[in-house]
Image (tube, rainbow, N blue to C red; front, side, top):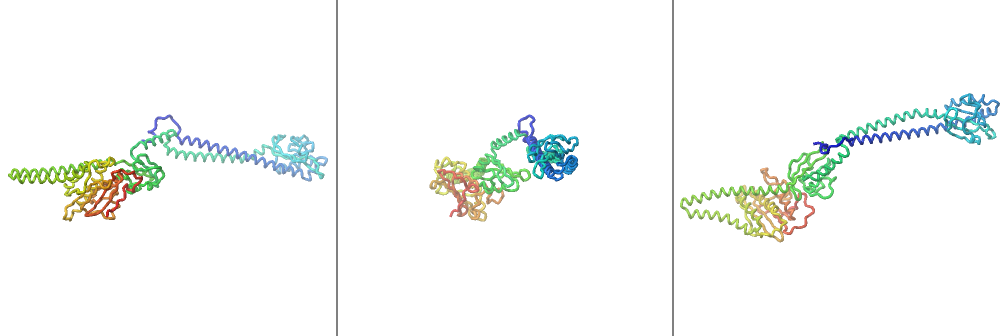
Length: 555
């Protein structure tokens, strides 16, 4: 299902990429147009300044010429000055060079018919001996002009010289740069438009053509979904940093504070879980233990190596129920075997009666009953707690069916009502049940080549404000080098490949959850001792990487 199908029907609205494209094109066009106008104004101003400097230089050069001074004092200035002025005008490329008397009557002009007529412009400052520049409309149209005095040897003003360039000529000089500027602006606009189009095409692909409102709704749906699902969800980037972690994942992994942006290795996860998360291959329904929970992990790769998606399901309750179901199944199998054995014994008693051996029949029946009753009486007398008593009786029957003798030590004693309400029956079953199961397996494995029968000894008593559970077996024991790994998920002594290595890991998790401790020792075989406080201590903020206290080797 695509992201668009999650959104409500909408009227036709331009996509976010389309809106950004329009805005960017308008901005680029405005910037280019503004730059072109500023460049034109700057160029026009520079061109006018250059023209003003040029005509000033020409006018001053003409006024300082000795031939001009001599001609203005002669009888016919026009005859001498007109050819000279035209030569200067053509040679310098300006529009006009006009020489006039102090009354402003022209002696020279590009248009001969204008000779003898008054000069159009201001000459007052030039008559005062200054050089004046202005833009004025004369016979040739608007022009930038300069009027400067002609001085004799006594520094008197004897004539005036005006040189100018028409505005039309200046505009003609700007036409070339203006066309180049328009071309550059058009090119810049085209390049900017193409770049904007390409960038927005890529944005359109990434946003799937959705508009801002759709993207906002999609983000809200995304956030609501992440916080509503009960499965834990964690997203990692290609550097194994947390990109996203929803509420369920925080609860399952026991994370606090901000985790986004942190490396997954810094989250304090169990080593086995961290190895599975950091591995290259996908993980499918792999069971892991955290500090207080059993979780099922699945991982997959995002795209072509962009990162990884982790999903976590809470398996704690299911794992506990599964353990209880295994116990019930074991009890059922033991009861079935005992029923079969009882039927055989009943047949023997019936046969003895039929043979007239009544005394032997009574002795055989009472002997079997006394053996079973002694164990029941021993457990019931020592353990008043019904959950522990039922578990011990069931495990004893299971062990007997497998050829292992399970005995309760004489110092075992637990009165009913001693255990606190905070110590749940489920945790007791998890701890003692898994310890006994592991001990029975170890005793059976160690019986090969051993003349002594396999045996498991259980101690359950109150010891100084703690519930002490001690299970010893006659197996091969635990090697000193393996002590640190005993309570890690996946550790197992079974050689048939059917063990998942969860039993002792669950024991350590339950012990830590209840603020207790567990020790590993060695006598005839392995000895595991658990101490659970009767008064629940304050919850510890952190534990070891695998969710249990580091086991200590008993002396």
